[in-house]
Image 1 (tube, rainbow, N blue to C red):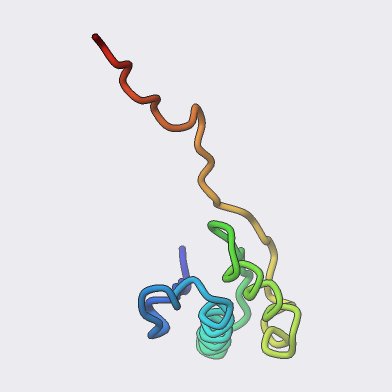
Image 2: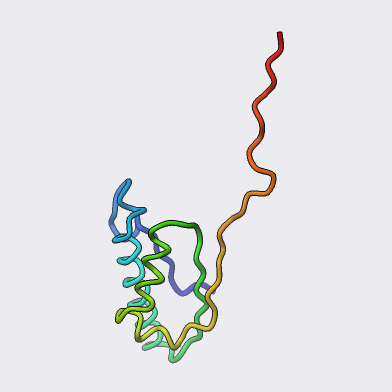
Length: 99
C-alpha cells in the first residue's frame, strides 16, 4: 500500500523543469516529510522505496536520501528497488516501400 508518491509536476515545476535535478531533490524532501508525519501518527512503519526511470531526478533522490534530509527516514527503509520499464523487442520497423 503506497504511503506517498511524488513527481516534478506535483511539486510545482512546469514543463522542462520537471525533469531537473532540483525538482527531484524537492520531491525527495517532500516525500521524507510525508513519511515522517505518517510515522508520527501510525507509529514505526517499514518502507519499500522504488525508483522508476533514469535521469537527474533519480540521482537527486539518492543524494537526498544520503544527505541530512534523509537522516530521519533512512532507518525505516527496508527495500530499495527499481521499477523502470524495459522494452522487449524494441520499436516496430518502418513499413517496407513498395514500387
